[in-house]
Length: 91
Image (cartoon, rainbow, N blue to C red; front, top):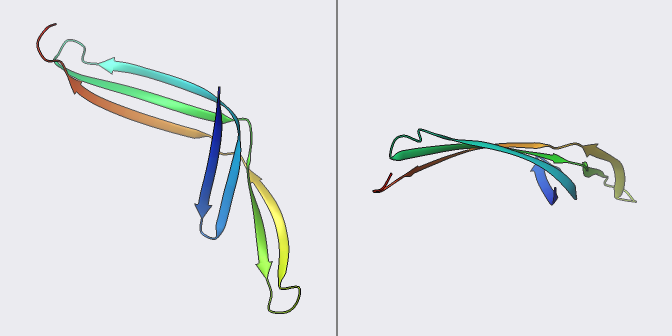
């Protein structure tokens, strides 16, 4: 569990949100017998909140700004990491 924040810009739309997030992590080391080590890790972030965005429409006559609808989107994340290292001396 963690506290997460997200701010995304897509074309003319800005998405924002924050809240509690569940996290899952799994990883494995490959090639343990050699001196070169490779580590693969995957992380999934599962937020318990939705991002929101408010659209605005501008006009050339008063009131000049008309507030549109607020939209909500769920935005989970998935990350894959690869690490490479080596062992000097020793076993």
